[in-house]
Length: 543
Image (cartoon, rainbow, N blue to C red; front, side, top):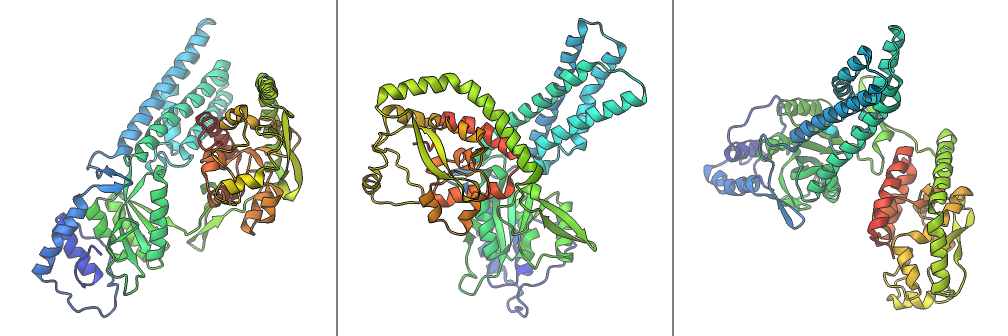
């Protein structure tokens, strides 16, 4: 560990932190020694302290490593979230002013009334207040999840409701253009602007910037899993600077890092690690030692330092909207909503599939005709390829695709598998498949071969978004967990397509499909559809 010698956790951490990082603020948290009876060597000699100081100070000063790039620690007073908040407020104000000017311009030909002018002037400050009340400017939601978008929708709906109530109570007659034009424009423009700002943050995070320095606390196994998850998902905006762990056996007591992250000491030394590494977040990873009063006191101490406290419940693959707090006798319990795809939700999803499916069919008619002619001229055989696939609840159906291979493709499957080093995987794909025709290769790259599946969507055999439709031989080899993919209709697109497509392993594809089944929502479907356009144009993982 970074803490020197064999001293006890609190004594060791406090002396080291004070020497390495300067005088620290004493906290009201009363730290218990980690090892009962370990009092030998409690008094640390100056020689031992001096020898350990260069290592600790160097760790605190050195840039943290992420991948192959060096990431400088966040400088005091230069936090990215403060700059992001200023940009967001300025953009929201600009959008509100633009929407108000648009309303005045539309109304100008009909003559401006004092009421219309007053409402237009009042719109920008009211919009900023509504977004703030809806938690649209809170740091914890910046560029994480969908709460920023939800706050904008809630603010717009709230303003319309407020205007309707005031108009009814005061017997006013606000211009219809305010509701029909201004508010929809305001909402859509704000959502688009927020998406652009978040995109800039995501790009910076991929290079290790705009991150929150984080100290992870907990048992060694839980800390290792949480650190790995954070490192694999840079878009969450957390960079693990240090770990404070417990539960290590005698052989691993001297380890200095976990998943490339330096181990500072024991969980009871978390506050010293926060001060030493200038952390902005403390993440507690399923540590029973931090519960009740101890966790509450830790929160108090972090509040004085303006440091966020997050606690991992140890529940994996559950989306945020399914989690809520249920207070029972003053004790907060985490309530996990059951995954449901029935009743009203199922009806709404089917209506969206039908509506968008009909529109997409009409729009793609010219492309369907051109592709059919190209396939007919490229190679002999039928234009469409029908293949038995397994749908919802295990029911089989004929999935339609444009034919991208020769007519003898199925007969040549065995020899093609052997040519691919005999790797008989659950999802067999070759980057250079000799059975694919010239036109077929182009169609596959941009997923144009899947356009006929819109007919499957209209017939109710598939959905626009869902898990990949499997082959019967694949289902025969499914394990118990994989069978859960069949609880919903397979999709024309899905998380697997917007996350790497055929470049994904079977385990990754299964994990994404199961996550979708458990956490489906209409908003998630719309997000996947919007990301599908970019994935198709890029053509990554399509072969």
